[in-house]
Every structure is written in structure tokens, then in C-alpha cells.
Image (cartoon, rainbow over the protein chains, first blue to last red):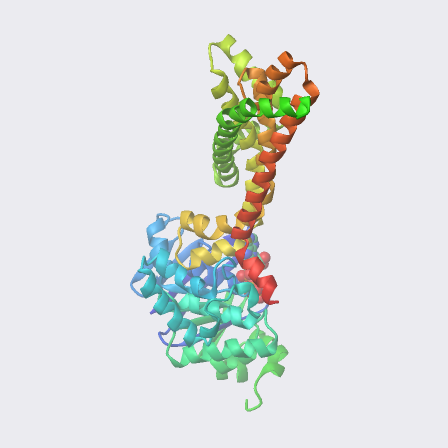
Length: 254
Length: 226
Ligand SMILES: Nc1ncnc2c1ncn2[C@@H]1O[C@H](COP(=O)(O)OP(=O)(O)OP(=O)(O)O)[C@@H](O)[C@H]1O
Ligand SMILES: [Mg+2]
């Protein structure tokens, strides 16, 4: 079970996340939508602790951390443990350019998990296969298309079998054709019951992939519900107006 | 054999001896110490606590703003007045290392900053610690940027070690001065000396290209397949 309790985040005087509570059921895909600057990236980054929440509680599987003045700052070990429960996919891939596709996927297994090389390589090849990139195992990231890089990045994020995959606008740096090959990989993962939290501006992605959609505005969760409900019968007028601006992106059978 | 060539051939062994026994070790040792110092300085200035970072910034400012020759004189002739006495060679190594440290720290700092922040985040996101991210993700990419300017510093250093002659270190230039003063052939001797320095720095430039190729593997390959 993935639970966020009353997460607050301040950047200086700016209050970016306001009392965000969220549950992600195992095996489900949750899409995080909302206007630019609403705090989607910050929320994802708080979950894997690239940012430290100002207050609140994060529970991932059997690891749980509390933040805020009343609690001791979490130690490095705690952060490390929680972080290993998540994998992160970045908008602009962030593959290590000096390592081949295969080495990118192996990195965490070798360095963090301390697996023997052969075992790490076997696992990495298997993951590349899964994202359809086995034929490019020995390629440098710089020689790959954006869509290919993002698929390798997904394999890298999955290497240590995290319980939750965080994707921050995984397709928004890609043209539609390349985006669709990444969406296909994500759909495949969803079919295999991978728990995912995806921040996206792409309603098509959210509508076709997500079980639950969360609408975030100005650091607050305004509304959440099944993707059908949120897109077709939004309860909150703010949600309705945001969704309506993006409706053109929806598939025809909606 | 003409006289000048004969003199050159005869003086080659003592000059090469001075080069191999003094200039080369002095250069390598000073560069190794200086590079380590530069690395530490860069790290402290980027990631260290403010007072310490300020201390290192002061050091860089001091060294870069004063002539190397004055620094060497201060260490070898000045400090003994304060009760701190060095032999010529250690004095030279200290002077050159401090100098190299100050200049390379700026190069290393810039190279580390040139690696996008997202690379740190990608490394952290797969569970690497700060030290692991630095060593395996950031440094290899920063090295690519840093090698050419560091090689420049290194080549400057080879030539600058001739200043150690004024600290009575019997390196190439001092050996040349000694021979020139007994043969009265400064033109020939100093030409030969210049050629020896040229040979040394040329060998090192070749080494630089090897290093660049190594750290830039992924770039070369990327260009080839495009
Ligand atoms: N490191 C930071 N320091 C200061 N302010 C920040 C930082 N990161 C984000 N912010 C601010 O927090 C707010 C939320 O940013 P965030 O990137 O989470 O939004 P977002 O919903 O992901 O937007 P987008 O759709 O444009 O990606 C913005 O106002 C942003 O300026
Ligand atoms: Mg964002």
C-alpha cells in the first residue's frame, strides 16, 4: 500500500504542496493531472525524496517516514530504504550518457544491490527485452531516439523491482509517434499490475492508462476519481474547466 | 661534425639527466599533489560548509593573484625567517602544488557544475549515495570537460618547473645555465634546452589526446553512427 498523509512542501515562502493525502492501491495506475506549476513534479519528487517534504507522512510498503518539526529528520538510511521502493522516470530521460543502454540498467543492480556482474547483466537484458530495446543493449544513449531513451530509462527504473513506478511527464518531450511507443510500454506494465503514479498533461495517456485520476491545482488535490468519472462527470467546476480545455485529446470512443 | 652539434651532443646527457631526475619527478609530483588539492578545493567550495569554503576561496584568490616566482621565493627564502625551513626540492614541490591546486580547482569546479543536475537526480533515484553518484556518474562526465584545460595546466607546469632553478634545484634549466657559463655558448645551450622542453610537452600532448578519447568514448561513437 502506498499512502501519503498530509504532505506539505514549502520552497522558501512559497507553499507548493498543501496537505496532500493520497492512496495508491497496489497494481493500479494513478494519473496526476493539473495545470503547470500545480505541484505535480514536486509531489513525485517528494515521494522518492529528491525533495524532502516539509511535513506529512509517506508510507511505501513496510517503510514509513514522517516529516515536520515534531519529528526527527529522517536519516540517510531511512531515505535510502524508502527510495529503493520507488523507481523514477524523468521527463527528459536522464540516462547516463557515458554508459551503454545495458550498463544504464545494470548500474543500480551492481552498485546498490551489489549483484555479481553476470546476474545483473542477465536481469538487465531481460528488462531491455521487456521494453523492446534488447537489440540496442550496447548502444550509447546519445545514439538512441527519445522514445528509445525513455524505454531504456523505464527499464533502469524497474531494475531493482520497486513497488511503485513514478513517471514525471514520461511522454511530453516526445513527438506523438515516439510517445506512443512509450505509452505502449507503460500499458504493458499496467497490464502486469505494476503500481504507477504518472504526472502528465496528456489526457489521452491519463484516460487510456489510469484507473484513478487525481486533479491537482495550486498544490491541493481538488478532485480524484476513476478516469471516466473525472473526465466525463467532474464534480468540481475547476476540474470541469481544466478537463474541458484538454478534451480534444481524448480517444473517440469516449 | 660541426662544433655546435658536437657541443649539443656532449651536453645532452647532463641535460637529460637533469630532466629525468629532477624536472620530470618535480612535475609529476607537483601535479599529483596539486590536482588532489584542486579537487578537494573544488569539492569544499561547491559542497562544503560556508566558512571552510570561504577559506579555500581565499587561498585560490591569493595564489592566482600573485606571481609564481614571488611565491617560490617566499617559501624558500622568506619562510626560514619565520623558522620554517625547506630543502630546495620540497620548497619547489610545495610552491608548484599550491599553484596547480588553485588553478585546477577552478577547472574542476566548472566541470562538475557542467554536469546537469538531472544526472545527480537520476543517480539518487536508483539508490546511489552521494559518493557513488559523484564517482560513477558525475566525475566521468566532468572529466571529459576537464581534461583539455587540465592538460594545459600540466604543460604549463612542465615549463614553469624551470623556475625551480632559482631555488637551486638542479633541473634542466639550471644544468643548462651551468654548462653555458663554462662553454660561453648560451645560444646553443638554451636552444637545446628549449628543444628538450618542447619534446617533453609534445609527448604529454599526445597523452592528453588518449585521455580525451577515453573519457569521450560515447561521444565519438555517437558521431560515427550519425
Ligand atoms: N526547487 C525549487 N525551488 C523553488 N521553487 C520550486 C522548486 N521546484 C518547484 N518549485 C515551484 O513549485 C511550484 C510547483 O512546481 P512543479 O514543478 O511541481 O509543478 P508541475 O505541476 O510539475 O508543473 P509542470 O506541469 O510545469 O511540470 C512551481 O511554482 C515552481 O516554481
Ligand atoms: Mg512538472
